[in-house]
Image (cartoon, rainbow over all chains, first blue to last red; front, side):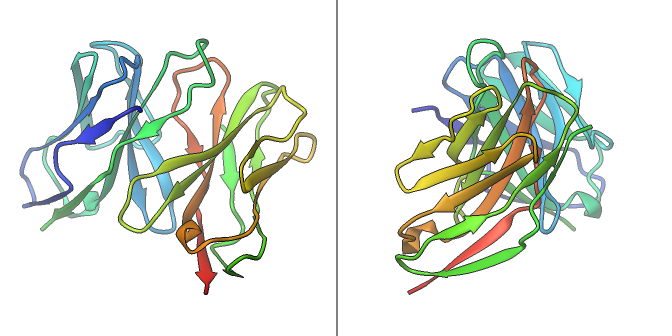
Length: 115
Length: 115
């Protein structure tokens, strides 16, 4: 089974802090994704990566950056956390497009509260 | 840009009955993939069922089946013999063919199972 893990289930940070959310997958997937989930808005794509050191902006990249130094690890960085970044953050991974349907497998999520 | 619409914020069904969750989408592409994901309370998002747009046959997975109407851009999920464990948020999602792009999600339907 595919396993996607996230470093924290719950996180409380203060406004202005730099926040790192870590995601690791064990299926050798090329693609990794970060989503933000808010009630009534569904999931929205923040950033994705299709290879090591490669990244692409999603629909709502403002205020975020990412890092992918190793294939299995994809980090989401909040450079200066703000209260409007309080949310649930979900990481996902998938196989390379063209090798299959590209089903995304999700981690358990990190619920971030910014005070 | 693609959009996914789930018009039912909440649905309720009696245990052992059948329920259908609606999903429509808007796209100009001819090749794509559609997914239904389930997110139980405080638990991980998991794939329920997926459909390739080029396949005319509707996908089925045990008690879960879809009604895929490509011309109408409709992708509904039918759950037969509903069980208490089916209670969850259900998200419909779209992915373009061949890209590493992320999924485009609907806002979700909260499914309640009445014992």
